[in-house]
Length: 80
Image (cartoon, rainbow, N blue to C red; front, top):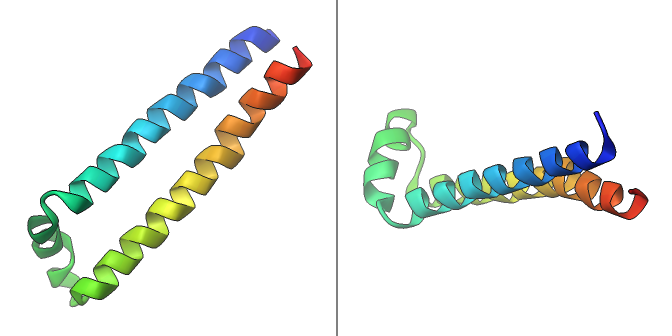
């Protein structure tokens, strides 16, 4: 694989993962009560804990996207 194709791969992975991140955020914000009833109540998690777990997950996922996809794309852009 050439540097250009690797750079394109990392950029597309970044875009796709950010779309998934935005979808996660939208699903937590808009139908919040429905999502909580679907996945929070069966595990006996309070609504505050449910929100905290989702916030931690979103932050972790965003950091992983930046670290594993965006930074390598930027490095390949600088090198190539």
